[in-house]
Image 1: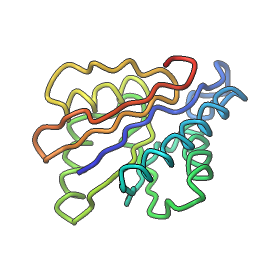
Image 2: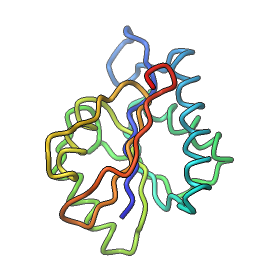
Image 3: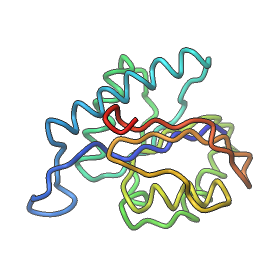
Length: 160
């Protein structure tokens, strides 16, 4: 299974609640840029994304919408899941990915938050997470249901 794990773009610091924090203008630019990179990457590797799982938090939803727009709105199987909010459980996420894999899903995009994105990489990779998750970072893991390898990752342009 190909799993793309993405942290949302840069978000405003102050809002009425953590759940309602929106992307900054810069976070919107990051998300669009990462979506454009993902489009090129998918085309050059003949990959596709079959399913998307997005946190219900506003900044994650906005990030997904901008990425999907950069991908010409091709991502249609989208699930909003509270299990991938900042303090979700990486083992539960891996268990859910196993279920999807058994159902024949071969590729997934997760749009989530710190610290969970790092924990998911550790859980799937089987080792300490070697990736720094700046806002809008994308990591691709090839996962066999037990252990994964990091295939590629992309920091937002200013962090490359």
